[in-house]
Length: 379
Image 1 (cartoon, one colour):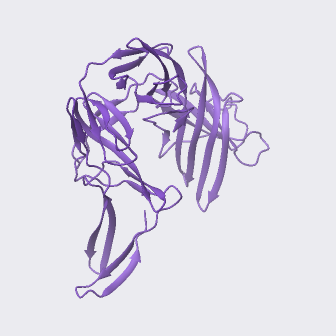
Image 2 (cartoon, one colour; image 1 turned 135 degrees about the vertical axis):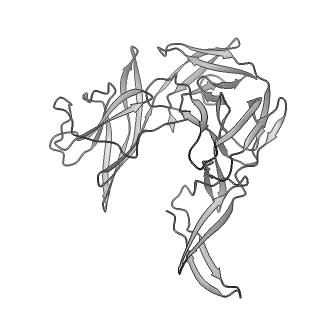
Image 3 (cartoon, helix red, strand yellow; image 1 turned 180 degrees about the horizontal axis):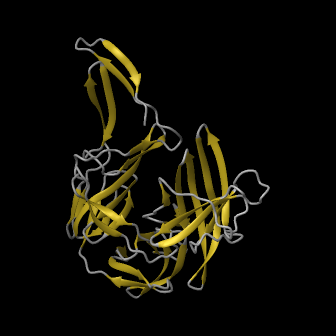
């Protein structure tokens, strides 16, 4: 997700799988007789939204309104385009893209709005992204650098600190996770235009700038940003792929990383892979593989970073497909799965130009005779 040249490294969409939309109040400011309203929460901050029309005579909803007080009273002008389409029993809606302005702590904050909406029967799904950025100067060990702060939680603040922790569930091994999203800091390492090299990290977590470690902290009123030295020996991690992203978590810190075949600096310590994704050229296109590290039977890799050493991490390619067969009476069920070099399940695999090809399957008997040919369908 891009925010004016800055990316939220841990973006948390608002909404969810079962969002409760209802009738607006009499003083809501909506205009269409079939307008619907929902109330959301962004990192503890209430936000109300409405699917409405630009005028009472408009046949179907065409605007998505927002109320950042959470009261459900929608001011004129605080909306973005909304486009509905239907296919069978499913109705989908495209929210934005558009920009609204919001008053926060005496400042006018532009907020980018984009998202998607689905309706199937009584079920309504909403994924809403609110994108806001603050920019200013910050001192890093005697050098003033331009800094951008990107909201990752949707509450329009830029001082939320991501929280790591252990995630436990029945039948699964405990594993590290990001239990709360946080905001992003981008430090320009050049002329302040953000057109050259930058350092990226999370607010309140270590970031490597000019050969030293700092933690960037933001005041409660969002008016001041401070870079405090962080004492840590430096090692490096290296992944042998051309383009990849990864989230590493320790007991105290979260590091969203992105790189290629070169090594990336990290503070000395013990980390676990929370998520990994990569792009690999395949037949002229970039194959996108996403590992959520969700394979119940495989523990996500542990990475030990030692001072002044480079640790090579085996993850991602080569990918290994497998077929699990279950026979019950005369019924045969076959499930197709893909794992990476570390045995982690691939949660997503696709091509950016469209739906990935369906795998073909051939079944032979003990004598090698073909008894069945077909394809797998992705569910």
